[in-house]
Image (cartoon, rainbow, N blue to C red; front, side, top):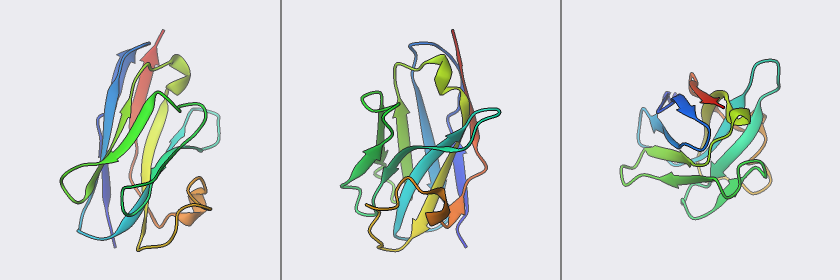
Length: 126
């Protein structure tokens, strides 16, 4: 069992930045994805990083504004979000799939991930 803890959400003005973090409860190999869900909308993919940390994926809506990267600490991943827009307002969730599976065909599929965090609220004011 792996627990995930997100942090870094908050209220920011449009154009501002936030850095979300996701920490795993134990040292393990994993692929990680970030998803978000706005009120009244379905959960959607934001970004993902493979188990080596060498390959990243982004939704078109955040490409060029977000960067996902592993921290020097082995079990922490950050999602840096810049030039935030009101439409980025949502609860953001990190999710992991343990092991060494290839993420390439599944990175945006919520069902593929094994464990989910509790979510962190991001609110962008106009």
